[in-house]
Image (cartoon, helix red, strand yellow):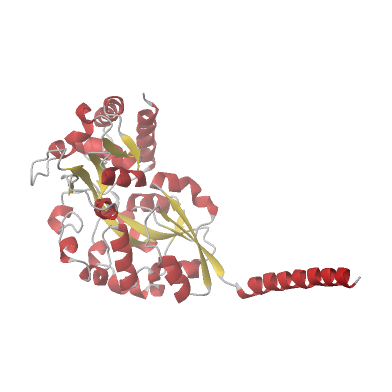
Length: 371
């Protein structure tokens, strides 16, 4: 009977301790949830941990997406901070899917954001363009060019000619050796740029040519489609050339070093005239449940040391002037990563409208469905 009583008592005590522990955990963790929706591999590994330490009132739930187009259908899920590119920001403003940010709650962003971003055109419609910074705070930016292995692909030094730079992507001799972003604007834009057209073209003939080029490429060159997977494929030597955001070039070089280095791979990045530059912005959806937390998170990302860590980890260009000043001059002085006003003048941002989205989606669906 004593043994039986001891066993029962032990069970009661254990159950009581478990209940107490559960109650204690629940009672102690009174943090308010903050849901952040960002691109994959687009934040330094310990940034969330540092934010939670600086703001113990918030618990971050962090989720990722691969492209603007895969993010868009999920906006009803109740995110507090999202990070779309500028053309998607324009679309979300027009559709009233995001709300203005409160710059009075963003002292770091107000102090350290490069004034250049107040002068750039983000949308074809100037009135809409002027509203973009009311709704979004620049996080990181990049250009769209070609990463290629100079041991396998020959591109004339110093050229900015789209025909010369993009040629390897359409060459059947590179079958199975080139990468294309699984993103309609980048892939269609690259085809248009190669053909000598605007990356925002709505001309039926030009778009038909771009679609035919991409369909032919799929049949004759068998490109690898993706986003993050292309970095590993280029770093390992599996691919010879790929569309790339400028930041991905830096990540690829880092991965080659992580793999122990490879003298047989010489990855370079080149930017054609007429290509895209893009800025990803931190925004707040209209169905956000934690606006104060969203403002705290956005401003935390503009702490100079945090901004530096993120741009170095991700490889993309920072709009934070203090962080840029702390970068290696070889990086901050590279006009492909940090374009001069002259280089910017040769590039375009993606414009958006209902007609553009409908037409480009139709083209991309046709390309992806082709054999």
